[in-house]
Amino acid sequence: MKPIRLLDNRLANQIAAGEVVERPASVVKELLENSIDAGAKRLTVEVENGGVKLIRIRDDGYGIPKDELALALSRHATSKISELEDLEGVATLGFRGEALASISSVSRLTLTSNVEEQESGWQARVEGRDMEAQVMPAPHPVGTTIEVKDLFFNTPARRKFLRTEKTEFSHLEEVVKRLALSRFDVGFTLRHNQRSIHQLRPASTQAEKDRRVAALCGPKFIENAVIIDVEVSGLKLYGWVGLPTFSRSSADLQYFFVNGRVIRDKLVGHAVRQAYRDVLYGGRHPTFVLYLELDPALVDVNVHPTKHEVRFRDGRTVHNFLFSTLNRALGEVRPEDQLLPTT
Ligand code: ADP
Ligand code: MG
Image 1 (cartoon, rainbow, N blue to C red):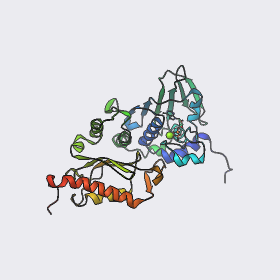
Image 2 (spheres, rainbow, N blue to C red):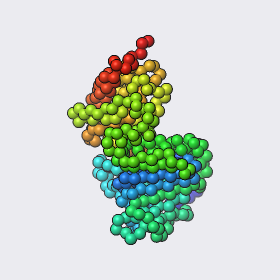
Image 3 (cartoon, protein in one colour):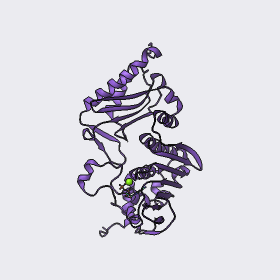
Image 4 (cartoon, helix red, strand yellow):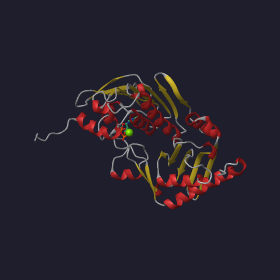
């Protein structure tokens, strides 16, 4: 046996990274969530080679002051919670203080930021085993830019699991898409290899929201969708459901958000399927972008960074509400559109 030793800092962070940083898409998710937590209203994501070579994210959030830059990059450093009780009502997307430390341990990362109170911006980068950050002046408007280069350059075993550029980019785009669907009030720009992929301005009116959904899910979806906006005793359902004639052969246009977070849930899936049961041919999948809002006390959200699970306190009521709302909405379009299958 070898003697017991403490892991050096980078190694400890790399092990932690194994949990949250699976591929470029997971980096983008963590960084965009940080930007949103920082109150950003405009987000720019630039990537090269599916995000493996470069991920650069700029935001106009409140920024990080110079003397907190190094701290932001160390593990268990967070501004979001300070005691266990804070977890109960955590309103931010992150709180573990692990993402930046993890990402910087498996890439070449620079963090540039400026806050209202400072004359100019500062930049931190980490190098070497102990991950001591070097901080130097760098011009930057209020907000933050993070550059992640050469993901997994020092962890060949992880790099081996990366797929083609196209596949990695499609995962990454999916992350941006979900966030853009969850925050209409925030503007998103996505560029891949200098090419503009999405340019989404903040949306507040129904027409602007339609436009964003059309840009993300295709104009055909919006043309073939019914708008839902129903509230019954504290349960609110809003969004778009595709007409049964606009069904798909795979379940790839299904987004369901609970209190702003995208989720996948058996109960929700079941309620939706039931509502479509009589109007959809077997083997076809409905399309929807739906937002359920309810008292946060009535739902547990598993906030593990890679899971999207919820547990409703009163699942039956939620199920009935979803089923009856969707069933009615689909029923109203049914007769005139002759959507009932004849076989
Ligand atoms: P967490 O989000 O769990 O707190 P992170 O490692 O993702 O942990 O970030 C560490 C800290 O760095 C955050 O708590 C926040 O204070 C700060 N931070 C990270 N990204 C940004 C950003 N884009 N704007 C402002 N502050 C940020
Ligand atoms: Mg975070």
